[in-house]
Length: 288
Image 1 (spheres, rainbow, N blue to C red):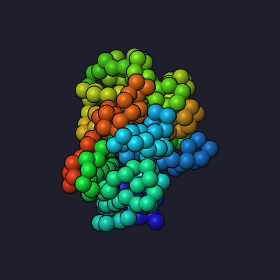
Image 2 (cartoon, rainbow, N blue to C red):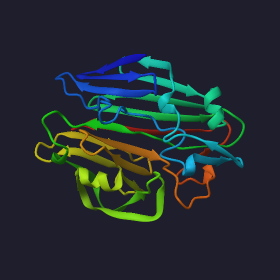
Image 3 (spheres, rainbow, N blue to C red):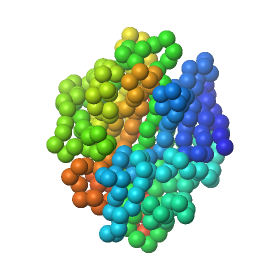
Image 4 (cartoon, rainbow, N blue to C red):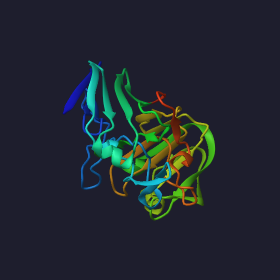
């Protein structure tokens, strides 16, 4: 099922499968979200829950028992239920089910609210532990911003709101973070986009930057989007070489580390909610 939102000159589409906002367009016709062309990547804006990234050997220890889960968790492939809606917002909810309890043995509520703003949209995750045992989880966004027809990937750059000197975490061939692997990536406030970088390292991953905003901008026109991710401790960027999009990904949590204990609660930036506890996180995209 798909729902339409509108506010001023903006329109958005939200899909119950995966709870995703899959379209953001201006009245003039410009579309900002990648259309999911499977020739490159069929995804668009998946919600990452209850893990972000890949587990070590595909398993994680919960209460002394191994549980298996695919990359980025199960929310992105599950139907959400609409629970609240207005002209410019919608809240969708995902709760545990027979399938989820096999790989993630916790009762939970994940509410996702997509809201149109005057010049963009916000997404809020509200995770609640509805069970009795402490519940570890990670959550994140994975928004693919499309490069307009007639423009090149290399015409764009990432611009952070603060001068940084930061290294990117590096993944091994299995998608696990190398504890002793880093690559200098940010010295200043700008990163020029180049497919060769993503051919070499798959994903650019930063943790604990001073910046809370990053813009994806055309170098000549200055047009693009700005992501406010200040509530999230990690930010990642991903594309497939040759694909006309870039994913901007705010993360609370990340892929497994090659030297980690394997226990869910030991994962970097994992949140553990006590019974009845709730965690809310919001990110927002602004058209520039």
